[in-house]
Amino acid sequence: MELSSYVLFLSLSRLLIVQQGAGKKGFGPGEQEWGYVTVRPGAHMFWWLYYVTPESYKLDVNGNASVYDKPLIIWLQGGPGSSSTAIGNFEEIGPIDVEGNLRNVTWVRDCNVLFVDNPVGAGFSYVDDINLFAKNNLEIATDLVECMMGFLTEFPGFKDVDIYIFSQSYGGKMASEFALEWYKAQKAGNIQSNLKGVGLGNSWISPIDSMRSWAPFLFSVGAVDTRGKEAIEILVRDTERATNEGSWKRAMNLYWDTANLVSNLTSSMDFYNILEKVRVDGSSEEPTPLDRLMQTQVSAALHVNVTWGNQSDHVLNHLENDFMRNVTHIVKKLIDDTDLKIFVFSGQLDFIVATLGTVSWVEKLQENDDEWKNSPRKPLIVNNVVEGYQKKSKNFEMYWINRAGHSVPADNPIAAREMLIHMIKGPSLVPVNGD
Image (cartoon, rainbow, N blue to C red):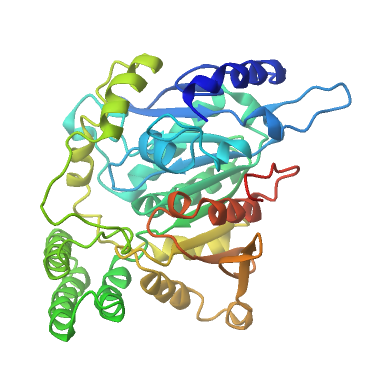
């Protein structure tokens, strides 16, 4: 369905959102809200909310419906420095794609979805002074909690709604500590909210475990030979030694050295989905269609006077002493010290955060949990097709997703939506094409 088909859709949206929470026309279909929260003096975080589309509403006896009948999903992109309002929205789970076509499988059909440009400096978020960029994961988490306090103050109807954080790549590293800090604030009564869980997708939780998986993974799929495998392993060992010594900047530089070696050995294999075709002539398009969309049409529609992506490169630079740090202990605290649902999911075709490395840190995390060890791994079946596998213990679950790389919702949207349903267990979920 093309963008020109929105008129009837928008009319229906405005007709059915009859309780507090009706939004405004932004960019694309449906009711939306957007704005900034100043999370620290001079540090401004941008968010963009899509209200759940009306076909999934549960009507009351009077025929009324409310967006607050459905959960709120918060989406955090990785990088660090990548934009949730752009990549997560237009390339993964939002209502339309980069070309303006309605997406057959969008999470906005099941939930309210809040995209946050995080950390400050990513996307439309910005700082007034270069010294205000976040320098570690805890600062990022603290900013995010402050952002949600501001958001819930402006939209108090969401205070009692079930809220789930979903994330991808470095976003998972940020989301884990964000969830822990939010949970503690919620328990202390410092924020009125109903945080229920966190999903960590292809997440940079244990950098060394991920890097250790690179050589065997590439060797197993024929992307390198024995000599290439051994060359990668040497650099990975050097990187691990640097992290053990606490030489974080050196470890990050060695990470880039290893990634460059892999790129050379594999003739620039796609790190995010090994089945993607890659041009060998070195051609690239700058800016990309997504860049142009955000910097022109989206900026104009939302009346944002900030140049999208203008500060994104600075985000990673200021996190050079935190990039290679392991946060499995944070995930462990989420499992042991909270009642939140913890989801880890991994696409089998991802290289940069390969499933092998993710399973490695998960197994070490759960090594004393007999329930996890004895729990059966069950197939994730949609339309009589095995879309992946699931394993569960207490409040922790892991999903192996078939036919997907780093961006699971983009590569296998049907499996990603099924996983979403498992997490939120929402009522009256609407089927999508093929269901």
